[in-house]
Image 1 (tube, rainbow, N blue to C red):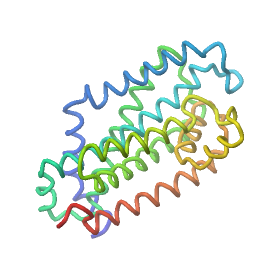
Image 2 (image 1 turned 90 degrees about the horizontal axis):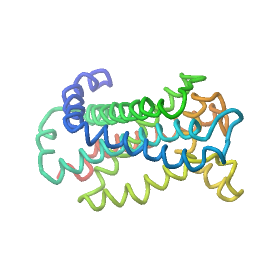
Image 3 (image 1 turned 180 degrees about the vertical axis):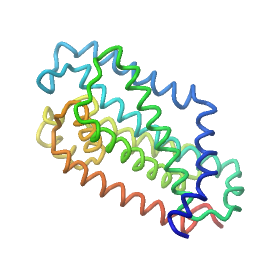
Image 4 (image 1 turned 120 degrees about the vertical axis):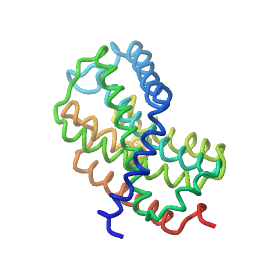
Length: 257
């Protein structure tokens, strides 16, 4: 089945996945926006007059793109991973397995819905933070590119985690010990140039750093590394993770017995 045919077949499952999180939007969209605003209030209030990362950019404004991207990443991952693990545990995944959908259609539906949720939450965070920092968008194409790639990367990673996990505590462990550390240690709250040499080098091994740095480039026209380097790293990692997710879906890993 071609990717075009898979796209057409994925539409019903995609709509189902979008409706799944939209029906509880207060929890899946509203709550993450509130959490990000609280981060901004606390860190921005404490450090606004003490830290300046880029010339002419206040610390509160610097925080905004990091919090937006962090929200995109965490919610894209949560959408695909939670959907799969819930379907596996409740047993209703069998109804999707009975359909003639290809593994490509599954991938497009789950990752597409994850991207939608991530972008919705990220947009909500950005709009909510306008009250605290004047909106800036020096190079919007960079911001859009990294937001889409970030949603696709974490949606694919969520698929892998959802397929691997057999129970909720395994999923929680994956999120708490992999996703959260990589997110918080990626430069959301600081510039990596402020770190000691060792940790600066470690940060360069974190693909989330390149996502956030490239996304921040879209806001201020300034970044810690070249946006083209960030794009190359993020695109490579996204394609690799997507290939793994597609392979697991094709073989029916932990979903076909």
